[in-house]
Image 1: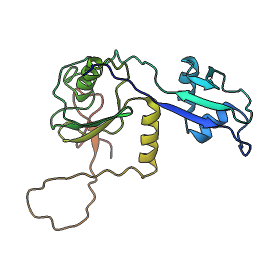
Image 2 (image 1 turned 180 degrees about the vertical axis):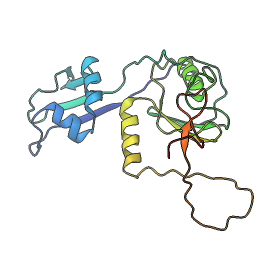
Image 3 (image 1 turned 120 degrees about the vertical axis):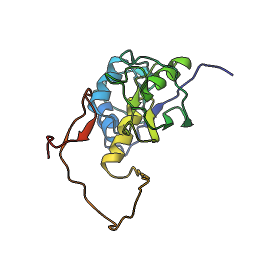
Image 4 (image 1 turned 120 degrees about the horizontal axis):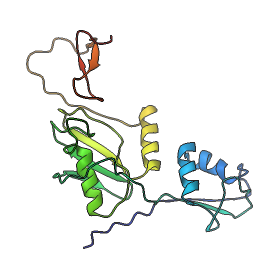
Length: 211
């Protein structure tokens, strides 16, 4: 048993005679769907390779060239304080960490929850397995809501899952327990919302809020 974790996250593309791509950047954007922001980070970290040699994104391509992107590079998350929290880990692999969040625990640190959020616990866990990554929750739940929160172990995985959410190919289900009799199958809640006191993130229904 080892506390060390090894992440192997590489994307590879072999150029063939039918390719429509002129340079490496075309492959990064069109084939791998990497954002411009992440491409800049990969360039700075020298994680883009042509035939196993670090290269530039404007490099021209030839038949049988192999373009590779190594997504395994360290990131700082010093903005989050590590805190030992018992995590209910449902699933973990090289790209994802899926956790069952208990109720009354916020996902993100805030002024009132500087060291007791789920992200603080994830930071402590990453430190314990020597994984230097930013804390990247893909979805969010309200503090009082229990349920599954997905953390991406790199920006590439996060981008793809967020893209799935925007395209409605990422399915989310919520279960609510209601006391009383529900007479309508569907109903719209339309109420003014304002910022919750002492929080820069949370919102609440308030008579003086924005409609």
